[in-house]
Image 1: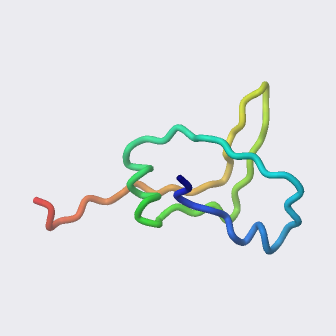
Image 2: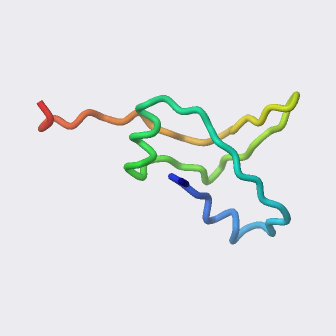
Image 3: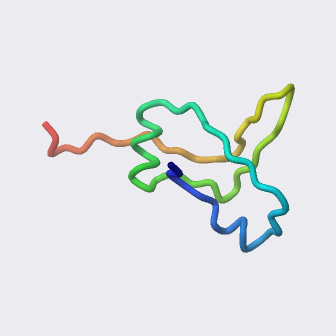
Length: 69
């Protein structure tokens, strides 16, 4: 399941190879992404020591709605 995609990257760059990977998120980050609030426009990944790091992505904290209480 993909919650967010960097569509502009496909327009701006020639994608030669694709990798699919999971990412560990906190609960508020999942809720925020499902609500469409995440931004990957200026993000990229770095591979170091066999681990992949996502850099420059913005996932804002999900705000609690006032009418939930």
